[in-house]
Length: 195
Picture: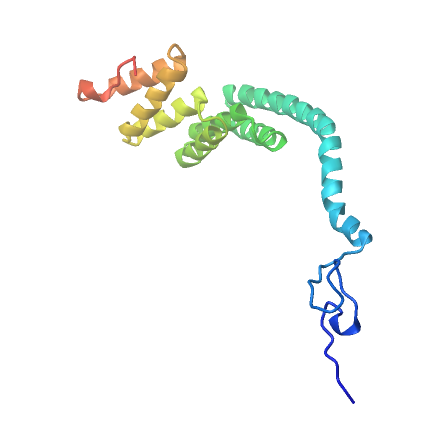
């Protein structure tokens, strides 16, 4: 009995793939059924459809969320102004939940925590607001004023330089400049108004 060696390309059975001669080894390519290809491409196709259809609804929800967040933030600021700090904190936290990118609500929440005597938490919220908007004047100046109170004048001077570039005539810039000037021991510590 003779044993014949049969290769993957059908060499021993007298057939081959891709037009190779029948009497020699050839390459065998992987062939997937068309149904498998469709199934493999299904997630990409569904993602493309979702990306094309979803944005219209997403923008509508975002606009509603933004309006609701601004309304809650305004009510929180009013509550803080009347001394109801716990109510203000609750309203501002709700505003953050509705729209996590509301830098005003985040900064005001920092103000509420600062008014309640928790500078560490206030600093956290000011930094969070600056992560969302690195040039938010209120958050930048409030964080710098905290830095001054904790003795970190270098950070406050850096914040003042940023404020002088983005908003030279803002009240935040003027308040920070005068706060730095009030505690200055040498004139070189205070940056000039032209950075």
